[in-house]
Image 1 (cartoon, rainbow, N blue to C red):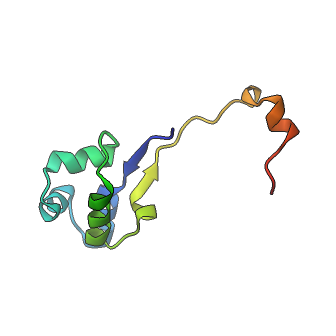
Image 2 (cartoon, helix red, strand yellow):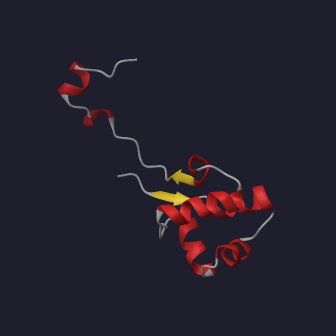
Length: 88
């Protein structure tokens, strides 16, 4: 599973001009909680994510960021992968 993080610091500054501390005060959560969301060390429940989106004026797609993961080496492909390629 791909690790996720929230782009709270980036979006808070870009959309509202807020720091993470101001966002945490607006959401009535601890500053460290917002920092953990931004680092991908914690993840809020869906109702809080929707509250964050509303506060920042962004969508869930904009808020959630997939952390990049290493691509699989070509040798990791199985014969089934090459025999039945994905449709374009």
